Image 1: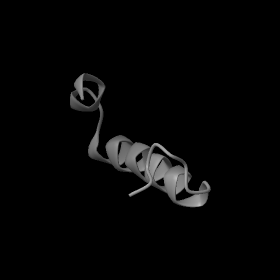
Image 2: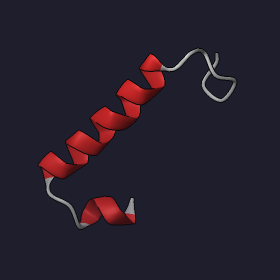
Image 3: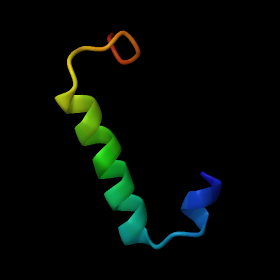
Image 4: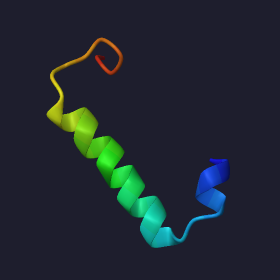
Length: 34
């Protein structure tokens, strides 16, 4: 969160996209399984 305050909106969105796409591509890991 602290890093996000120092970044532009484009950087924040690209970081969020990478995180979400990585989670969606991975097999159902126990960390994100619901």
